[in-house]
Image (cartoon, rainbow, N blue to C red):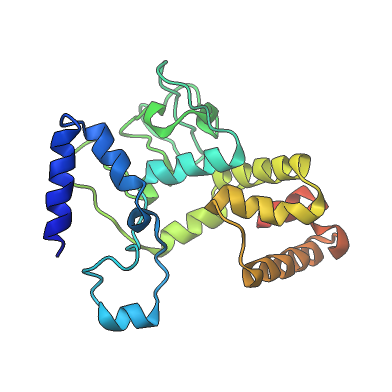
Length: 229
């Protein structure tokens, strides 16, 4: 659909000495790459199949990206490189022959997912739910599912609850009450909340405060309430 653009990129790729790093940098810094996936009615009418890339395509993130993003937002991510693998965290349900004698930490010591040990009989349930390949078989291309189990594990996972609480404590320590929702949006989405989003977040926090028995006027002062956000 964009032959002239392909010609331009090919020419610049040659001029840059066939540098893939420069090509990738040029692509990811474009307005098209950074655009939202929000649908515009006028653009949808002209280009319903999005062949002209008037918006970003919605896509599922890989399990490693989801986990690492949670660690990054909470402030627990250890971006260090190299070192030994971190043993898998063993839940009470992970029983059977060959069970490791020692469990790793729930958050994997904050290390990126690439440094988490893989035991094919005792795999991380969170990662498996988001389609991490089974190590017992060769996988040429990952599957991408969208199933209720993924929503359920995001609601009930010990790891998710832990990172939400760590993030809430970080927000409370960094910002005054009236700036915490705004800061949360900046850290999670790299943008400020829209007025409607800010209002919805405020109402949600007040409702969560009532449910937890916390005065609504001090909703953002309570770790457990902030963690609900």
